[in-house]
Length: 239
Image 1 (cartoon, rainbow, N blue to C red):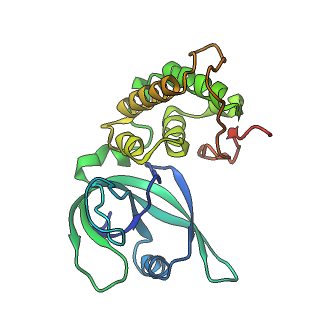
Image 2 (cartoon, helix red, strand yellow):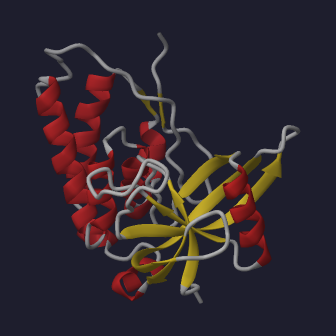
């Protein structure tokens, strides 16, 4: 029952995946209006990244062709007029055409058929190289000097684990888009492992030793959202 036309929320570096949770702080008037309009219809918003190499203007940048639709599941209004909302990813979409419409925010006609498998929870979990994902995570955590709730990670299903790690990863917009456009969960895990290995090599990290030959970096505080759990599984190490 996804709509054919959805509002676009362009946000560089923001990656939403099916059943992932994304908190947003809405303050620009045009996006406050977008949220108001979403509540009048199906509560759906399309998260999409600007394409820095695609042209356009600073105010109206070209957008990538693939994004992810999210449904507003939590809402609060602050005293200064901001909206604090949480989106839960529904499915990826492909932009068919961007519409010229009266609202101050951008809207596009989209199709979901290319990503029909997104509507099936945990599809393809058995094909994921979980051991490879965890190995890459351990190497990255050692390089980032971060703490990890390994118990929470061990309890996370493959879909929640892979998608949450992708969403909270500190990679750039191109890498995030590659993770988004991966054909299925198995492919997304493979892309995540490959990008992590490239990043570790760039930093001069010796894999699986916990030793770093370059300057240590730190992860921003982040949550790995697991269905039915609010456990924080990865957080910044104390200074």
